[in-house]
Length: 319
Image 1 (cartoon, rainbow, N blue to C red):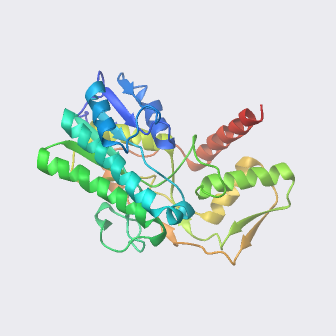
Image 2: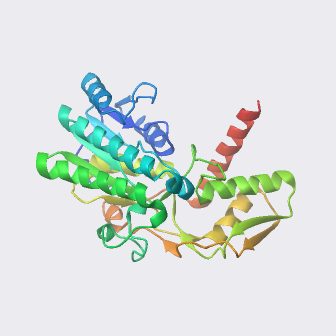
Image 3: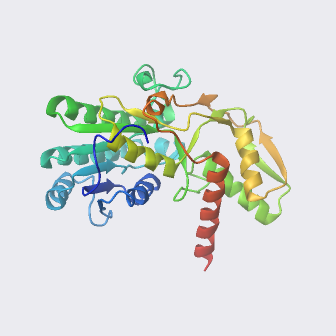
């Protein structure tokens, strides 16, 4: 795809920090095609919040390449309830991994951020240079500040030490390994679960919050993994790079699409007492598209695959 790679993963020892998470596990799946040695460290073996343990692990295992997909994540309720955990844990994870990578001379590192780094009222679509131009969404501020610090840390090691450390900022992700808890999940997996349960119980209707008019962008996690590998091979620059599909969808339309995939044929009811949230959140992905990368999984196919995975998980739990 596009120009010749500037960095090859073939024959490299590649550490995926956070390999059990949705993004990390997708990166591991994608790396299986790269003829590299994939290194992982279960949380029971390595606590990335522990600086000494992280340095010791890097010294022992000597990775050449690092994907930093490890993070403490959660929805608005969790961020609001545990602000210190979200700020401290994420700062420690990224600082320990990036510093340990520098100490042993890792050739290349990619830090994975989040689109919540952008100001609450950023112009749409949100370009990379919107960073630090306004105040953040208060509900996700703690997580966002930690992720901004991670981007800046990668830039600082590049500037001061000449390290080839880069950052990627994904839009809303979904796919296998997602969180389907109604209390802590994001909108797309929550809607899949609601539609599935409404169908299973024979409910006449499915209720959603607000008017359904806000627009959101969704990227399948396997597309994100492909973009991360692509950037590792083709990009070396100071700026973080947005990763998205470049298209958004009304929440109301998303609900109808999910209902179609799940096979729920009842009515969609709007609870207008509930808030809509930000009217639109879309990333400007022109920087990545100019490198000749674009998302390959369309939303309906991605939702269908994710729904099959979810049903499979339910069947395993009931066995």
